[in-house]
Image (tube, helix red, strand yellow):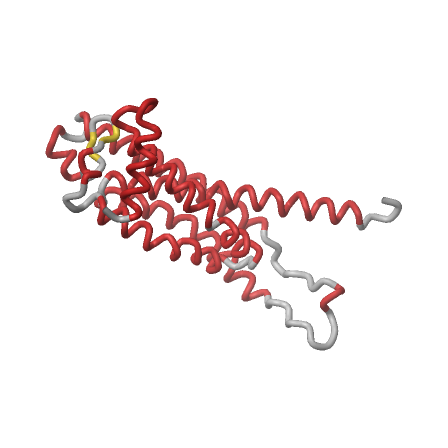
Length: 224
């Protein structure tokens, strides 16, 4: 038994008195939240870097975890016996369609998963486009960094490229729908949870940054 499997099994046992047969599915969600919490400092540093590409680092670091999740629910592991409502955690959408069709017992579980992922992806896309539209056309150079030895300010073309990339990247969240349709249900739960965390984390960091900027601007006013 791998460390990942052991941890999920133990978390499932703790949740079983409350969630019964869906306890392991809840354990996967809880495990994903713990992973994202551990990666939060990297996500915050990537946000402060102010480049869309910097946000790829936390995603890359999650790939080994996703691979373990995929392997655990694709092989003859003891986790395959667990379910989320009527659907086995090792089931795929194709199997659910064969078992009862789109609106069968298993199919409805997958439809609920797809709907939740679509909501998160739409939220991400809307926030990303708003942030890109609100980005300044030219970044002012703070007085403290002007002068000899200061890094050159980004050009208008560079800022425009960053804005376009920032508007396109959130749309990639919809690609999670395709992935969730071909991987085991357990991996789909992981994708939903980590994507929702990413969007909520960025929204929170943006709100904090906006509040800090507003406070700085208010403090810089004469007579304040």
